[in-house]
Image (cartoon, rainbow, N blue to C red; front, side):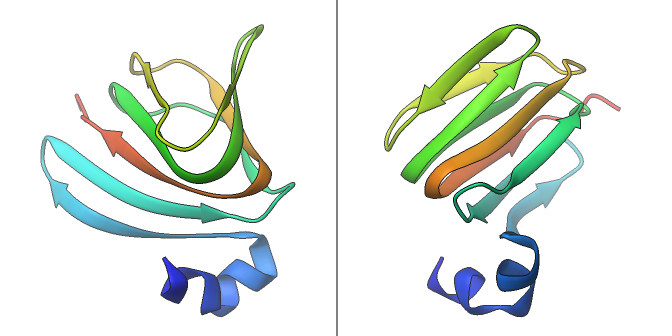
Length: 100
């Protein structure tokens, strides 16, 4: 996590990530976000989970918004449009189970 935050992409874009596991049916990504940065509306190619390790993120899916802190976990079916924003500097594990 410290390495992610030291890389140029983090300071330029407010976010950085590293894929920890990548197989045809599973991806685990460690993501770091600076407060105020995030990911705009997008879809995942399969079901996902987001587990916050540090800080706080706001996760939005349609009209529903969830603020998540350390240790909290959220799951979402694949194909759902969603966005995430760091309320405070944050780190989370994103798990994707691609169905395509």
